[in-house]
Image 1 (cartoon, one colour):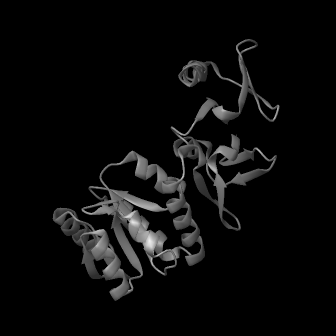
Image 2 (cartoon, helix red, strand yellow; image 1 turned 90 degrees about the vertical axis):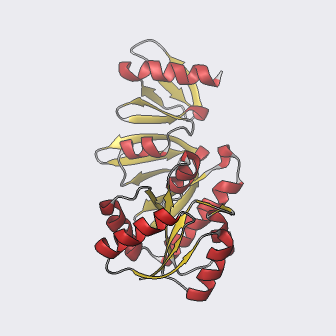
Image 3 (tube, rainbow, N blue to C red; image 1 turned 60 degrees about the vertical axis):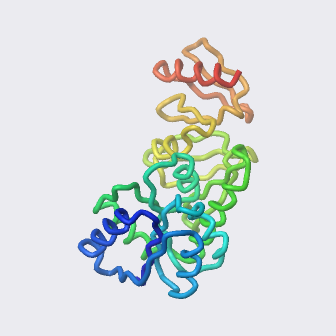
Length: 247
């Protein structure tokens, strides 16, 4: 794959080039850039198939490059040393990222996944990412893989998530429910700090759609769709603290 690195730290570029040389022989490095401006020019000139894109560049965010190339044929792997906010946006968009210093195994997995991505799915993910940086926090969108491809949902339309073996059934405010091949633990990590709370080993709820918490009969919640869900003893304190923080 013809590859470009867009990164403004010389040490990070050197380390990534070394890792690619030894662990990813299918990658052909054809160019580099150190800024948003240079990145836009290099992509136009070299037409790469894969880009390693640093989130924070000297003259702005790497995401700005994607706003220019909304219709593109290249795959993207983000790199970052920090920025939980940016990482959350990337996770919501179902895009790949690598934390610096880059781990060899994670790099190989990311490159392998990039080779398999379809253009249509990647464009939907990029659109979601760009949208999330423009919208208010309560209007974030999330890209989720289904058997038919990538589906985009507004996060606040997720009412609750329930475990079904190694799958998760997601219930939406419009009454729709969809089964995803992610574990409840994966959804918990994905939705962390986004207004969701794990109340039971089998249930995650959107606190914005919680109607009542009944602290008797072991403890249970009533949701806006009139469903009732148990609250485990281990999770009760966390739920109470989360509700107090909303007050």
